[in-house]
Image 1 (tube, rainbow over the protein chains, first blue to last red):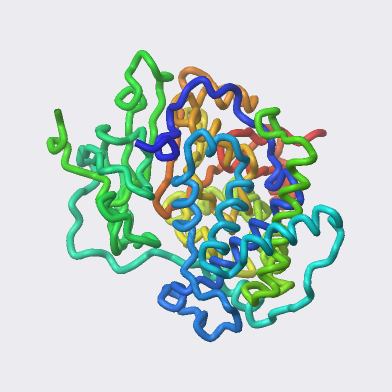
Image 2: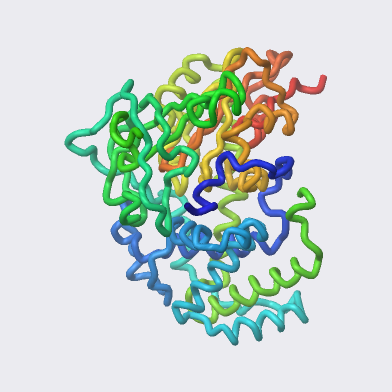
Length: 251
Length: 205
């Protein structure tokens, strides 16, 4: 198992952070912006539901970059390291490495220029506006990248069914919260249509458009009655491959 | 910021220089324009933000029929308010609202997902691994730390979405607010209230 997949329920972490700021340092805005521009010019968008003309964009970026890319990177971190870095620090590390690995940026150039801006924090950025990309960014933020697709012919579960959460192999990336593995719950909603995720997760199970269900869990069934707070219900939206019939998978 | 992730100035300066170097190189290489990052940030200052969610909540407080429609078909009810743009933009494609009441308190805690168009960008507390770890195990203890004690008889519902559905909470309307306009009501609603970690206080007389 991977720690990043199983954050739910970890103990001894101390008090929660109450900071309501979105960005706790000015620099964090820039890496958030870079990531969002990458999503807005991602190569996969020419097949997204709103068909974006990304192939014709005046950009040298010819990669697929989605939330799955960023999440896969965070899930690949050594778990102790994962906890050592603040949220946007992880983004900065992952995105910098991506551009180096894909050959867009030379590691040496990045180091040299970092030293330059360290010396002269106010030194300007190159001025090279890109109006067509700006238009695409606005279009992407307005219209999104919905995973909703037509409903499948049949669904395996209906409202009221008791289900058991699957326990697939832990691979590079998952959308299954670890604390729900093998737990029993009841379907409370079958969402209309089917939802595609950005990538296939292989043996983990996500692939193509999938039904999504809302499943209700009694906290006592997850943590044990003596170890959880009373009168607590957990609802989780789960992709179809993460559910099994309640008798399957029982010990 | 708790001390856990408050770093010395040197570490922050190093990150600031690195991100500036990265942005400069990406502009040089034609991956970004020099106006691209600012275009993203401006969108979240003016178009997508918690001011949208606050308007939706205020309407639900003042119009019981709207509240009902919002709970039954959230995207359709949001569309009724004629925001300058569809609220189905990035990260808001599939919205669901749940309502707090005298008997139920809702807490939203999806791992790495947040409804951008309605609530804007996620605040730090929401992304912090401590909240995500403890929220599903001991939501009442977490809520107490946020200053929201939940009575023993009230059911706590935790919404953990790792699929593409984005949840938000319609908090309870504060007492002594009958005289307020919809706009004044909206001004009372915070992102925290719409994620379930804050109550909406009565207006200061």
